[in-house]
Image (cartoon, one colour):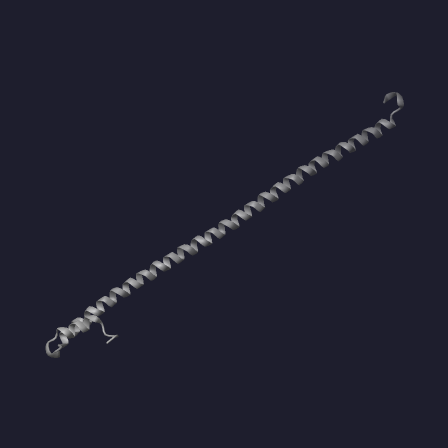
Length: 119
């Protein structure tokens, strides 16, 4: 009697002299089917909520990963731009220094070609 629903047992106890009718038995089974349908609907609702929560979590995880990669890219890009700017200005200073040195050497060469009295 472990597998028998309590409603069927209750119906059997209410019958006099064991005279169960098919109509009463059908009503007991219909009541069981209705509760089974309600239970199934609840389980489907819970499964849907679980799937929604899982998808929400996955979306947040992917969004966080994309944000991390974007931040990393921005950091690397800024770092490269700073390095390139520093190299550019260092090269500019070096170029100006050598340009000034070359002009100074040319001036000294020209000065050495002049007679001593014109220097």
